[in-house]
Amino acid sequence: MRDPEHIRKVAKIVADSARDGKELVVVVSAMGHTTDQLIELSEQVNDRPDPREMDMLLCTGEQVSISLVAMALQKMGLKARSFTGAQAGILTDETHTFARIKTVQPSRLETSLRRGEIAVVAGFQGMTRTSDITTLGRGGSDTTAVALAAALKAECCDIYTDVNGVYTTDPRSYGKARRLHAISYEEMLELASAGAQVLNARSVELAMRNRVPIRLRSTFEPDDTGTLVTSRDLAPDYQICGVALDTNRVSFKLSVRQDFSVKESTASVHETTVDSTYLHYNSKTERLLDDLSSLGLNREQVNVVRTGDTVSQIEFNCEKRLSREAKEVILEYFPQNNGTILSVDTDVARISVVGIGATECHRRGDIIGALSAASIPVAMISTSNISVSAVVPAKYKDQAVKHLHDAFCNGNSLSEPKTTT
Image 1 (cartoon, rainbow, N blue to C red):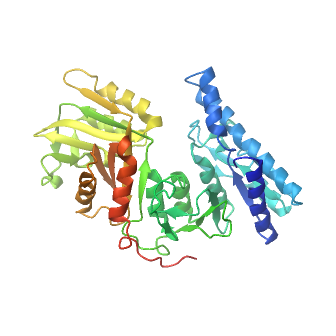
Image 2: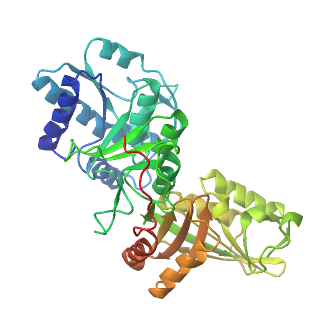
Image 3: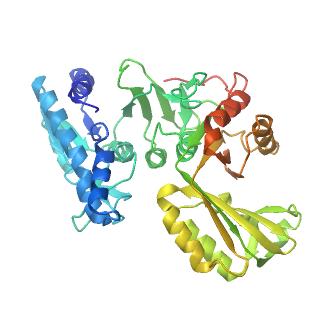
């Protein structure tokens, strides 16, 4: 959606599908860097704008796009009608600038389809039950598309972007990246959550919950079938499916003195480093972890270093958009006095190795070893169900991706797909 020429290309892809007899709902995003430009414009007026007013501003980008795409389709002799998120029946919660879709009421779209029209819908936006406009956060157009596909019981949700599928890492950054013909919802969700920008994590979560197949395709290669995101029984058995890079992180290290006891079921836990999920803290620390979790932080990825019976350090990283709130929560419970020290590092990157084999008992050590062999310092390492993540200084990010990709995404790490249909 970069410029009028690209809008005409998008319209041609849509027109070709429509002439094959398909009923189509098309979700579009804003043109080029419109959203970034609107954010910059707002900052010139108010450096801390009201979230509701930001949503009123940001939603205009997609509304320009839907009208232009509908016009382009009409120029080609096709019937098309544009719809805002609210007109398409997308109802959200009241969290401005990062709303979640609660339900979709697509009756107007269904009427449009019955009339033989192509419905062109603004992505990234919805409406609360009190008729306030909301936006869904970065990548929200993917979420809009999947939500509509689920509500309309579509055969598939094709998402067109500037790459022709899901790769083992970003092919624009590392030439040895390999395309995956198919991938499970679970693995795609982990890659997206770990920073792979090819699909929005919320959209994958929604697709998995509603069993909506996603085909990730290239706008510039419309005949290429791309990558299928599907259920685990149809996807390949990758031990390691990729390495994801996330530069949108802030690292926190909190040095404190807090007594705790280890639960009986974990008495054999290593004496120096223990994951927070294995610890029984005093109520103050538990409330802190609960409040951090409410911001979207996974408690399993909070590292706790202890000495004897005293917590000496709590480490975690979060999205930059949450850093102000996270710092306020920490300082509410642990003001920087009496030996408490809070360090915040914004110049970091998180590198994640993703796949069902990533969390094998030896893998964490292998990942640290691969980075150490390349003289890349590791500030923090954490695990989730199917990934291991390392936080490194941002200047080492490309080098870290290269070394981990070469170590874990070679030909032996990737199994052949069961299916590409």
